[in-house]
Length: 167
Image (cartoon, rainbow, N blue to C red; front, side, top):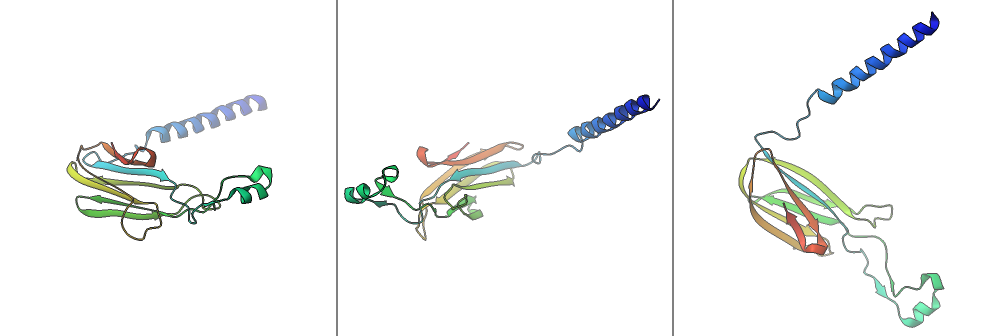
C-alpha cells in the first residue's frame, strides 16, 4: 500500500511540475517588439587602442630578456574606453562610454542597445571613438534607411571591414 502511495505521489508531483513548465512555456506570451514599431539594434564589441602605446625594443634589449620573453615590442595591457554615439533623424538617442572588459581592462568593450521607433524613412548616423582623442570620431557612418513595422534593423561594427555595417 505504501509503495503504491509513493508511486502515485510521484506521478502527481511530476504531472504538476510538467503542467507548471508547460503553462509558462506558452503563457504569458512574450512580445519581442510592438507590432506597430520598428526596432533598431546597436550591437558591437570592439577593443579600443591601448592606454599606453607599445614600445619597440632594440636588439640589445631583446637579447637581455629570457628566451621565453623575447618579443620585438613591449605592450601594457590596459585599453582605453570606447565611445559610441547613435543619432536618428538629427537627434542623439545614445552616447555611451563603454569601459574595456577583463580583469586587467584589456578586453573588448561591448555595447548592446535597442530602440523602438516609428516605421518609415529615417536618417541614422553611428559614430565611434576608440583612440585617445578628446573630440571628433574615428569611425562615422550615415545612411538613410526605410524601416518596416515589426522588423529589426541592426547596426554592427567591425574595424577590419571598414567600420559600421547597417543591415
